[in-house]
Image (tube, rainbow, N blue to C red; front, side):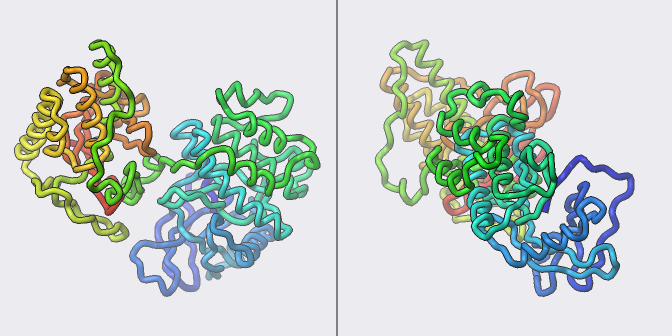
Length: 483
């Protein structure tokens, strides 16, 4: 299951006609495969849980396609997309096609194209599971031969999967030198090269290139650990006999750092964002009855320095409004696949799409006033009047208010700036970015206060509302719509 994007055609492909099952909409079209949503026999879900992968046999080759199906039936791994089964078609376009589990979190190529190079900890979330899958493949005497970023897809929890177990076709920029000389020269060593090239791409946003023109990795990724550099350079050796095994790469990679969850909000369809997990710093159950934490950073002694630090910290705190606030009470209708929301944490006013705009504005104004009052009076207990108890917003606001109280100061006006990508950066110790506006901001994007709703204004553009819901111990986006 791949997601190529370079292929275009004036004529849309015709839906396949399987002997059984129900074909849905065209999910993805590419140079080598077309993917159609599919509901296999026996599945009662309204949404197709699988895709049919229809090959262009002129590009893939009938023999290779048969090998892909055959290998998928014999090989399974937690980080390889499962083959549900082989499906026969009514016509002769292919002897049989694969029915694969649907992965809706997009793929690594789109992640890097959208977000830019990843940090090492995020990279590890991808490359360690891929290394595990390749290592098991090699242990069974097999090799993949077609690894690239578009061949690594995600589920909605951010877990990575190889699209199949191969045999694949060389991917430009990620194929080993010996594959260019002879396409059939696929061994475990070629997979090692491709894996290192994938790591390089995730960290830098570019392919490593040939040895004699390759820029040193430390010049592209400042402060990269020398052990990472040594392993990747060894894997990218032109001589396949000098490369380490995939098992050795895996054993090295697990010591490079602590994997960190991926940010998929910007690469999935808007209607899927509610299903993406975000994180609280700790589960509420662990925070219950815990004494208030002191400020994590000592504030500067000067009044000017204190104001600057407080404003910088508010950039994080205000951004967390988009993530760390539950809906005031009632929740909008959820998709069939989403779980039921947890019980409301406070008895407050309900906010829905049909709420009277004047009533909504009144509630938002109340929250603004309550938040401003908390900072004017430096009373951390007042945070509970507008923020969900022990949420990220509550914790950060209390920390800043307590720091201000130590210095005998207070602040009233706060703001946060949108990024050029049209996003507002959330807390530096979380893993989520939420788009709150879709244009390049010509002025500051201001937080107008929220209890589950954030209003972001953009000059010469329009404003959106971001609504979040609390589900058990996670926060999820409910809606992003024009306001």
